[in-house]
Image (cartoon, rainbow, N blue to C red; front, top):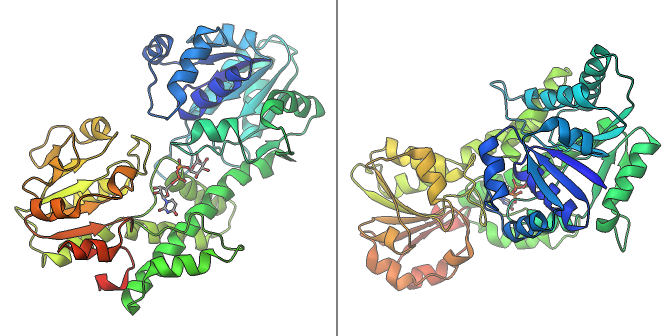
Length: 443
Ligand code: UGA
């Protein structure tokens, strides 16, 4: 099919590339000419495993094209995806200005039927707003062109986005027209083999499904972080509790890892946006507010442990940090717990030596040059002259380190394991003090 995607960010680029990979003729549009020029040269603006070769191959074969020319991209399309950003507004609600600008552009240019698909995470009711914006533009120029608006939220995980897109566990389609459903069934047929993955529903339910999924996952994490904090107080080990409850298939092992709090571009934003939507409809979301509050406190947990260990005396100390990205396999530091930790350490007068396999460039961009931050290009280099080591992101390369070497490098033999990736006995066996999250001993 002929597909146009507005927005070459994370969602748009991955979706466009995967649709091109299965033989569609895809045009990706962005207002950022510099980004489009880079994509034309095969340069990928984000770090995502497996994406670059797919973009290059499909660009080379002509299945995937990049342009800033919205009018020609709209003329090309049978299906138009809106995959532009919905950053949080001051009050936590999603800012729909980019989505509605695209809708108006579509209305101003549409000359024959197209299915317009909302892929961005947008509050309930946005499809109606998009429909109205397109219709208003069509009316303004006296054009009588039919179109459909569909909600088709994405469930991609950063780091696994290509696989999630090529092998989705579900394809949620919220639509109110048979013509639109047919078009999306055809488009998604290559990803819908072996068993039915398409879940059809009305538009508003599809919009809410996206928020419900992320809010549920965020709730699981905050729940486990709360249990971890209780475990710490009562002298229990949350890692054993986690295995104990995960074995119940109704609970499951996924997404019950306690840690330094959830970050990223989705959970924090989406939980807040859903809270906002609820309040806008006169419902007070007590659970969602608690999920948020627990997470905000959890992001301060590592600093609290470090501060307590050093009796509050952090001025002049150097803390080594392994992991800056909000999770492994990405360079994304949006809302990352590392940011809270670094800010708190700096406020307490400590210096930071940090290592992350991918996020050093992002950290340099966010923090700029500063005397109290050294970004190291090797994990053990971060330990040089440091008093303590804090693990913030569970990159694979951190899982089995040389504990003897860590002890020999550190001024104070202490490790703070913000993701519970180490066996406390192995750490302590090497002569290091160990602090984890919710592991009784950190009392
Ligand atoms: C999340 C969802 O998992 C995707 O399904 C969704 O499509 C995406 O948001 C989105 O809305 O676009 P993502 O933000 O890439 O994906 O990252 P996750 O793997 O979900 O991790 C989010 C955060 O939760 C990370 O900071 C991670 O460290 C934390 N986490 C995750 C935990 O603390 N414990 C866990 O057990 C799992």
